[in-house]
Image 1 (cartoon, rainbow, N blue to C red):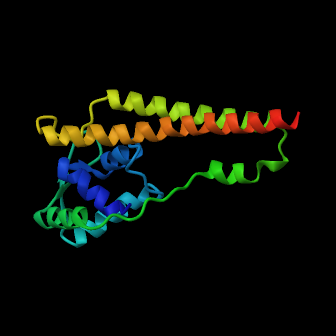
Image 2 (tube, rainbow, N blue to C red; image 1 turned 90 degrees about the vertical axis):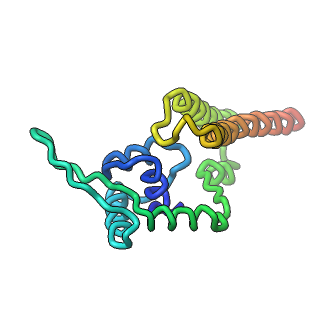
Length: 184
């Protein structure tokens, strides 16, 4: 995901400070990117230089000065062009699968312990996703039915990924148990 387009998307919903943008990205399951926190500010500078955003400096008494970023017409046009472009292929990055691939030196108890740990991680992620769904999302306008449906389906897609992973773990456990029973 290009962080620049994620930022434009966020700003298309609401003007925000760089700090607020970082919080939205960090609290999102699907706005994932692997950059560091300074990347948001670097991207905002790039977007500002391209004329895709502007900013307003807000002086506050007793608090630090804030820069509030606002998407421009050019920024909206660039965002729309990007949204209409073909998406990048999905990447599957699961460090657990790499560990599992070389788990042959584990005994059955150790393998089950490994699976227990991973299963617990997935359950926690699913629980966090379900709790996040309960919180009102500040990015979308609930008065627009299609937007409400789209965000609901985004949340549903993520939830289903975790549920599918839990089913996969159960299938793996059963396959391992069947082989273990055959060896006895």
